[in-house]
Length: 376
Image (cartoon, rainbow, N blue to C red; front, top):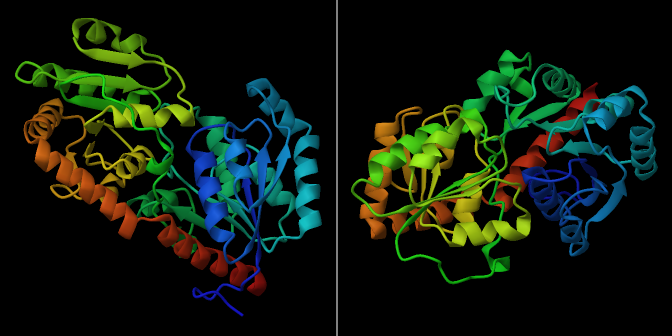
């Protein structure tokens, strides 16, 4: 018996995500849940993961392992890999047909190398590593994982050339846009705290996210429109302190935000702004889509494949504060149009970028990996 995609039913799939927090765990959870309907799916997780309770409510069989707590621990875990050996031994006992890595982790390559007789499929979220993310060593480890993979998955067509530049054949690259990363049904609907429109910047604060450009655009907008800017994310804000001090109606939440808190910030907002100067794709857009919020983003990376300009959001040139301010003003002055674009974004994800669609695409990638391993 085979699934509609041609992948054998009851295929054993090992989903391996050893990170502790962030979008990676949500992606791993959604993948495992959706694959488990037609295939026998096992998850291998860090016991330090933030949302382990979310796995308890699923039918997915998952196994927890002790991982490192800091960078020193990460370094020594690669030199003396007894912790990864425990994971490998458990995977061997289960005898999966394929390994699926939804997010990079420093241990991925070591696990792939040790289990080289089992095909592996690796997600590559940033084919061109961001300049603000720890560089050389991280990139070397990810390159090792990428080149050990049977197939690689990127989130948009625009990202394939960058992965090819890293030495990966285009013949083994698959494209599978992510589905929504939040479920509005689980979010409490609270009363709004204000009576004027709110802009939301959400995510880790690093230079390529373009916060400085957003602050310049916001200064232009609020000369004519009463509005509020909420900035949520961990990261060093020292470079932005002067501009923040001059800005009014700005709320800064400069810390890591847990999954339980995310809904509150989106429910309190009217427009989500992504002023990125460079990007591959965005995990913030699927969250905005889940809440039916319009998004203003920049023309960089694969963002234009997530948003249709003029239909499900606004797209402006990267690094252009004036164009960004114009788009924000248009969104705030035309509330009904903004709401319509937010609804269109939600519908776009539900119809074209759903987890069901993502799973179908991933099944094809898994099948190709299995067939390639058979030929090998």
